[in-house]
Image 1 (cartoon, rainbow, N blue to C red):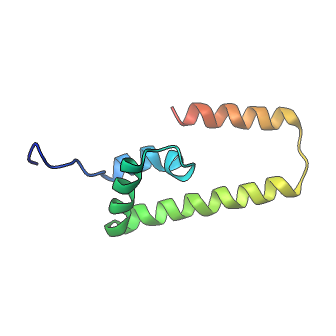
Image 2: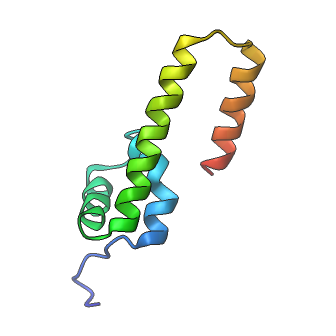
Amino acid sequence: MKKTEKKKFDCKDIEKNVQAYLDGRLSEKEILKIEDHLSYCLPCDKKVDFEKRLKKLIKLKAAEKSYPKKLELELKKILRTSQN
């Protein structure tokens, strides 16, 4: 890779950043790199699509039922530590 060439995301970068991408917590530059990678990498595209549908389903199901506040706090704690 030439010094002036911008580094593209590889599959490991996608896996590491998929949640931040889906949550809209990346810069426009990072989003473009991910979307470029997804345009030619079917396995990563499928993974991101799966994660997107899973998040949507969880959100839908969570809105349908009531649950203990303690469960919500524990889930948030788990999600925070898994994103680091």
